Length: 235
Image 1: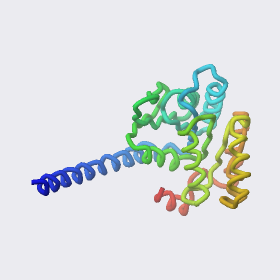
Image 2: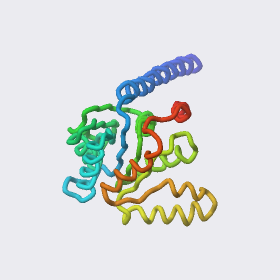
Image 3: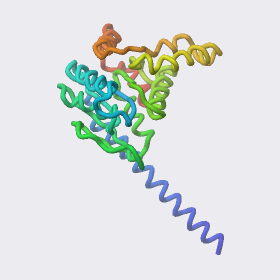
């Protein structure tokens, strides 16, 4: 009886996992269909715990509005805090404001400043959407989630699985300790190369962030090359 029950349970579990895979595929398909035409886009990250009126929130609204008016769609996590500020600035500008929401047991509630809103159940599908359609990455102060996205983006550019894009950290006072640690410990111990540190830019003024992104693309277009497009298929 134990063998029969075990076999039935095993079959049930495999069937559930198989159907789960279709759910994952559907998230990738929806993201591709709804985001493929939004380029150029800038992904903006930061804490969900920052309230309106905080200088980081206000800086993000200003930055996103400038980028949106300059022709960049704004992509955020769709939630409160810095994510809301990014969508708010983008929504007030001329380009699309995109929220890539995630179902979480706490913190995540969708903000009301989204022209395009997607909801993910799987972190990895959401992370691919952030990276695949980004012309630039901007991180404001945040916690583990922001650090996770930062390291993910740095790794993809470092390994050349993703295209070389500007990776900008705003608020030097907040980020400089981390960058110093990377230089001292990671570079100092030969765990990364000098060029890897140079992937990061520390910029405080929203106007200079916009300039840095345009400077990066001055000698090439925003559209990925054929080689970059092929590599990004494997993100």
